[in-house]
Image (cartoon, rainbow, N blue to C red):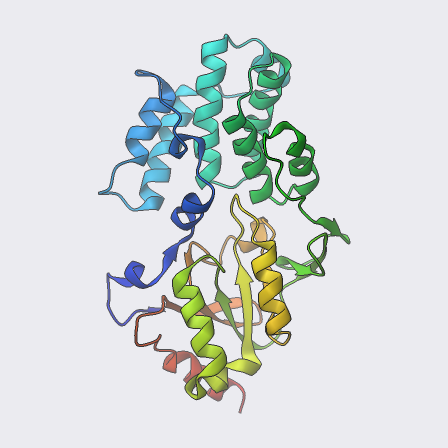
Length: 304
């Protein structure tokens, strides 16, 4: 059961992840790209700009419109056969979908279209950035680093991911700005997994309270911090936090189907988990602090 002391208003006290990351790393449609009237990209922009719909509903409508108008199959030969205008429209449309929906199939479509743009020497600075962002969101850091030289102001290199995939819900352990290690979320027994982000003000206020206020001391031995990754990599911010709080490190998520049943679309979220199964959730961080008493009661019953 999800708890919220102001039912229906919890978004006021939480950052919606796709919108948060959109401010930090704009999708091409948000970075000034003009949609051609009558194009698929223009139709998707109309759906995306609808303020009456929650983000999840907008994405569902955008996916449906995209599926109706885009080719069913996009292999290199199909992408190479596209006329220039259709190629540009499909890239912008697919980049917008990829910004909100981080999945390998959408990334593969975007890569196919991008490779064709590159082959025709038509890829723009915004398109280089869109491709790089989509790769970051799925932790394809090697491929994202390969695009750095195509940007007018090359960004810092992303870290090298070491180790092999392990069974469980995958995360990364931050060793340095240049190296991270594959790991999995610890899920034995009762734990509270806080979904946070260093760019989210509500997350920062929650973490400040949890680490300094005595009323949250009971949480420390059970807490893990999980960071959803979008099209920007907050490596320095996570490392700075971890250096200051070595007993409570931020663990960036690795995009994987294993996370499908764990809500990570808002931050902060507090999931009470027993042996990897979510049994209760508290959403957001109001000005007076989140009401975590239900989680505390369950922890006390489960650990005594």
